[in-house]
Amino acid sequence: MPEEILKNLYRLPIPLVGNPLKELNAYLIKGKDRNLLIDTGFRQPACRQALFEEMAQLGLRPGDVDVLATHLHSDHTGLAPDAAGEKGTIYISRLDERIFDPEEQADEYWSGVEKSFMVEGFPNELLAHIWDSNPAHSMAPPRGVPHACLEDGDVLEAGGYKLRCLLMPGHTPGQMCFWMEEQGAMFLGDHVLFDITPNITAWNDLPDALGAYLESLKRIREYDVRLSLPGHRGRGDLKARVDQLLLHHRLRLDEALAAVKHHPGESAYQLAGYMTWKIHSKSNTWEDFPLTQKWFAVGEAVSHLERLQAEGSVKRVLEDGVAAYYPA
Ligand SMILES: [Zn+2]
Image 1: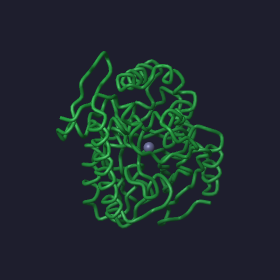
Image 2: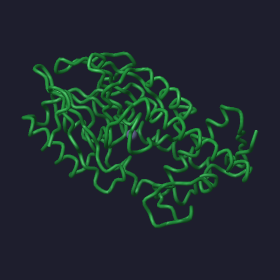
Image 3: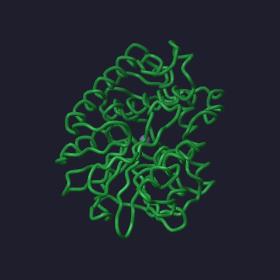
Image 4: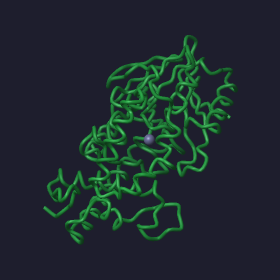
């Protein structure tokens, strides 16, 4: 059932079956001239059915909405073309538009990502299977979809509301939040979540992603947000949550630095194995981690190691094509 949050603004819960995130919050603004759907769910039957049922309860069919994506991840963009149909426009940050890249460009990008993971010590034989179970590929929108790009500061209007686009890089290079100043309401995407810690990984096109993320956290803290609208699960107090997330990453940085000090000269893949992870699995040892979890863990470890380099406490040395980390 759509949950009416403000007049003409609804939250549509979209189940993410089998995914630890559990549910995506899509939001829909109903207007006279246009309807705006913010985020969509995976391109997968259960999400599609849920989204279209929720929309139908508001009297809307596929093609009756424009789609506004908070960021490129496929749980937020997967159904954008289905929902927008032929008439609707899909909006996304220019820095995240690559999710709609044509095939060749997308293949080139992903082989670059795999190469980076190899340099960080991720075993070749595991990389060969990484896309078997990773939702990034299989549930993403089809490639080469037409869309419109957003820049920091752009304003969209729908249902009598004004949404200002705020670029908040970190979770993805082009993560955007949408600010409705008059109402004190902020669409957060995955920049700040209340029940989950947003994943911060390494990006080939966003050096020191964690540094960028921490800056974005401090920036969003300056807004007088009275209604937080996160991309997943429950709402909460934004400033208090930002403070928790800042502290969380400080502690994670300390943990990563301790791992480097105890195991100098090892790769990010090995160092990730010395850090603590909350995962939904019976496996206890790093070697037994499910492959997708390993991928996320190594990405997160690299983003913390990049930050430690920027802070001057760690140095990275290429040894036979693999990056080794040492205390600086
Ligand atoms: Zn995300």
